[in-house]
Every structure is written in structure tokens, then in C-alpha cells.
Length: 289
Length: 284
Image 1 (cartoon, rainbow over the protein chains, first blue to last red):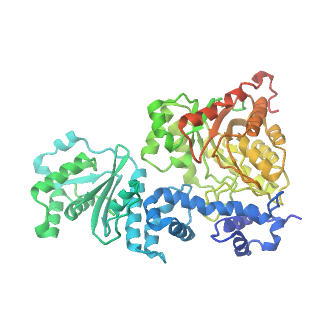
Image 2 (cartoon, each protein chain N blue to C red):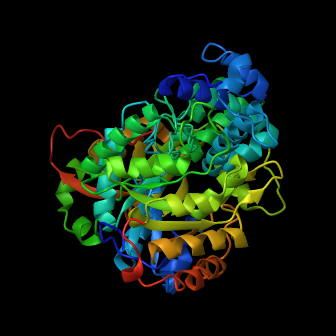
Image 3 (cartoon, rainbow over the protein chains, first blue to last red):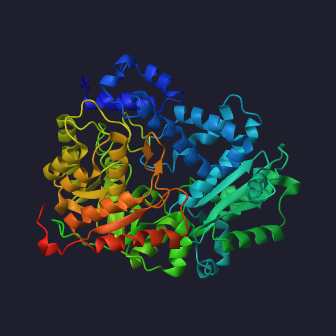
């Protein structure tokens, strides 16, 4: 005898079972509010070789695997850091708190860095948090809209006396990070065939992640260079940004030669898309992390 | 020929990241590419750039996995807007998705979940298909899913549901012969009856793929060469539909492009066997 449930209720029940992280029998019991377990055979038929619960269990068993696969593709270094079991446990807890609500899996991991920071049972949580922040920045930069970098002739055309008031607008695929652990070096070890891992320790670091010709790059910065680049990315005029950077770093501030070298490197790397001259009230870029 | 005169694009393969470099550098002689819509809707990076290059040189059709046409949440208008824009950008010949639902209550479990085949579900889904076709300004093409669950409340077979849905909502069909085979094993029905009973003049595309036999059931894994029984189903169906755009799906353990393309080209032998279109009864 078939139990006729409205379509919406059948779907709600099945979803509750599919996303449950425990064994399928527990999942079916937990969804008793939608369908009492003893009435399952009235909703799902057995096959020649599988009971109704085993048939639903095929979908349930694949759910976490799919979530893990999606998150692993965005966070390969974090998986390596936590180990397969640790990562699987993190994924299980994470998708229970932040399930996908989008048609795309591309943004499933957007909240993972903040989740790592407050996840229970993780060793070196702060390191994992920084690692996840860096990997998230990489995926964001990978998918950002393409905004062509400023052409060298446009830079050359800026009158010298206009540079102090000029504002540099970064490309969309640009993220700045201030980190408290050497996670950029850790990320490098993904390519290490001998699977060596650097020591997990506390060490400040600064990184800019940007895209050029559809390839994503990571560039380590000094604290002073990060400070200046942050000011520029926030829309501060070049002159004021340099003054602020010098004031902030005092005796450790960059020399004029270093400033020139950075500026030339950033321009050549295609980090900026435009130079705005003398525009007051320009909205600061939202790209600063 | 199908009722919309949508073209037979020949034999194609899915556009997958691992093959981007090969496709751009070698420009392989593939008839067409099927593009997973969701992989390109929210990126402005390399995938979209590659897609633009591919769409310049090859015919393209879009294939989605997140429309949730059978779902009970409202249709996602933003998703449909982006889908329509992507179809225009790539000059896609058609847009397809699956007869399934993918989540409710605002969630997406990113799986092609099965429907009970009831009058209620038919009315509900047909109304949504009509809405989508109106928004996309083209007939939606729906693929028969593979499934592992059968609902006791179903009052009709999947092929009856699909056929009635296609007629009532005036949509096209993407007939996945591997899915027919997988479900026929899992639910113990005759796959020949299935392919013999879908409306032939609504079939605008085929999928052929490999699967994984688990003993107690078959998983639609898209991870291997197609078995002989699946090719036979394809042959049988082609006799009814005539030559229709054919796509080989391979999504797990994806091989080198040449291996994939060679597997797809096996379809040639079966397609060429079908009788000339003028001898086919329309809608048979």
C-alpha cells in the first residue's frame, strides 16, 4: 500500500535523510517528523537486492563524498594539513553549518576559513585558518571578472606633477592578505613530491594574490610593501599613501629606491587597471582583505 | 528530424578542464562540445575565456545540473537569467537539464534526486518547464535521469511520465541510453520498452556513457567505456529517431582526450545504421 505524501513533503523528507551525516538508519530515524521509519516501505519500494533504506542510502552515502570532493578542489593544502580523516570530519561539520544554497559548488567553501577558526578539535587552528584564507583568495582571484590591466603607455602619459594625487585602481582579480603563519611556504609544498611539510610555527607574512593573462600568482611582500599596497588598493592618492606608509613604519620605512622598485613591479605585474587623476570622493576599492 | 528542426550536431564530447590545453592547442576534429552550464556561469577567469575560444570554433550545447525542474522551491530566476546569458554568449544550440530535483528549503544537495511519477508531480513539473522555456525563449530539453529509488506512490512508468511531460510542456528530450540501462537494472524493467516508447520526434540529443556495476545496483558513474548493452540501446533508439546529436559523457577518471574522443566516435557505426529520415514515422 502506497503512502501518498505531497511532493514537497517527500522531497523535504528525502533531503533530510540525504544530508544527515550519520548511518542511513540514524538518518531515517532523525527524519521521523517527516516520515515515521516504519512507514518507509510505503514510500520507497525495495529492489530485487536492496531494502528501501539501502536504496535511499545510496544517495545519502554520496552526499558527503561530493561535498568533500568540491571542497578538496578549493582547499588541497588544508586537506594535506589536516590529513584525510581530519579534513573529512571538518567537511562533515562545515556543510552542516554552511550547506550549499547556490546552484554552483564554486562558492561552497566561502565560509570555511571562519569555520576553521572556531572548529572544535583542530590542532594548530590558527595556522589552518591562515591557510584556508590564502586558498580562498586563490579561488576568488581565479573566478573574478576579467579587468584588463592599465597599458604602459597610459602610465607613461601621466604628468609627473599629477602622480601625488593619482589614485591607482586595482584589477578585480586582486587580494591582499596579512598572515600570521608561513602558509604561503606551506602551499608551495603541495608540489613537493617528497611530501615534506614545513614546520607549523608563528611568523608574520604578507601576500598579494592576483591574476595575469588568466593565470593566478602569489607574491610575498614585506610588511612595508603590504602597507603601501593596501593604502593604494583602498583608493588613497599615491602621495598620501606613501606618506602614510612612511609614517607607519618609521625607521623601517622603505627607501625611495625600494618604493620605485615596488611600484614598477606592481605595474609590470598588471595589478592595476587604471590611474585616476585628481578625482575627489572616489570610492575605495573593496578588494582589501 | 525533431519537431523543432534542431540540428544533428554529430558526435561530441563534454568540455572538461583537464582537456582545455589539448583543445586549444590541437583544435581536435570534434563535431561539437557539451558545456556544463554551472561551471561557467559565475567565473570571469580562464574557464570562461576557454569557453569563448571553443564556442568560436565549435558548435556548443549547454547542459545543466542545478535547475531542479522537479523541485518544490520556486524557480531560481537569477540562475535562469545567467543561464540565458550564457546561452546567448556561446550561441548554444539548446539548453538541457535533468528530470529531477536538487534540493528544497533553499538548499542544494547537488545531486539529481528522483521524482515520484504521479499526476501531481507531472502537473507541477510541466508548469515549471513551460515557465523555464518562456524565460529562456526556447524549448527546454530534459534528460531522463538514472535513479536508485522507486517511489511506491508512482502511478506511471518513467517513460510514460517523460513522454506526457514532453507533450504537455512542449519540451525536447535528451535521451541518455546509459541512464535507461542503469535504471532498468536498478528497477527491473525492460530498457527496450523505455526507448521504444519515448516520443522520437522530441529527442534532440543522446548521451552515451559508462557506469559502475556494484552487484546489487548500478551506479551512473560516467567513469568508463560504455558496455555493449548500452550501445545496443543506442542503436535501437537511433532507428526510431534518426541521427541525433550524440555526446559521450566521461566525468570520473577522465582519460586523455584522444581516448575519450575515440570512445565517442564508436557512435558512428550505430548512427549510420539508422534508416533515412523520410522513412520514419513522425512521432512514432
